[in-house]
Image (cartoon, rainbow, N blue to C red; front, top):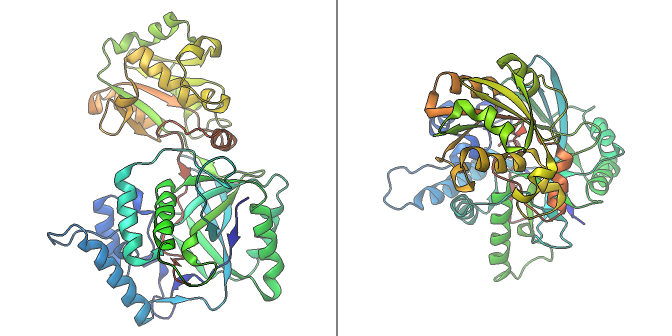
Length: 440
């Protein structure tokens, strides 16, 4: 089972940095170069200086990591960053509008250290997607230079009785140590909960509730695998304390109880499709789908932000310049075309769509990679507009319902990984609320 620890986080000092909003940032992997420059211009102490270092013109491509390490050390020395005096868990709340709607909701979790475990049978930590070499090498070089985690791995834990949710509710009755509204209008708040004194039982309850079953990585697979590599390297030369910090990784624990975290659908737009206007008829002719003609507004109602519950029903929206339809998979007909794996993977809407793209559009897995024949958007209206406007050679929009959180966990527990762009958890946690030093 997963092991969870309280820790003494490094946090921005309110005396040195009174406006926390100027120094936080989104996770590094969703920041464009232009956005990175904008964040850095707000304050030289913005966390992107250490979490997303850039090449300053040095011929040595690794100089940016050394510069991040120097900056990190300077901030610790001059008081910009200070370590909390007592080990704590850090309860985190996001209050936000569901994209494309006026409806608001809040979701809570907590930051702690998660003991690193290799993936495989019996592990308390389960992945659900594949990783790429390039991003892992970047994170490894940064971790090796700085000896810290700046961005958390987001993991999901079971909370069927809402026991952890009630404890989190108790924690947020106090005064937050951080309270910021970001550029997207999301309000982020955090409470430090020490593991001794009056809050010791609350911390123990959260650790127990979140550690009963294996946790599933939602976001941060590259960071987790990098932390494993760093741990193994440090073990080779370590002679110090029995439970060193590098045996753990900074994690944001989010429960999957009565109100699981929000997952947005990622729609596909196919390029270079011959006879795209005949796709609706072709889908019917394959015998793979039941086909119901649908107009633009009907598709937006079925697959837009105000659609009903998450997917799992094998429903796909199709839009071409000749019109659209709702395609409902005939699962038995798809069986010969699905990839090997467990039942959870094979029943995913994104798995069915991947097979359909190959049959209808001759787009195999290689064509769905970045820069290939498929573009991605989280906005169904945008996907349709790309087709109508022939943007980026768009020929056909394939619209999906969001992947249910329970299905993500089921795939991970089967030991499988999901197709590319299967999940997008929203909103992303900010970077800069808590940093995790790996030396104490």
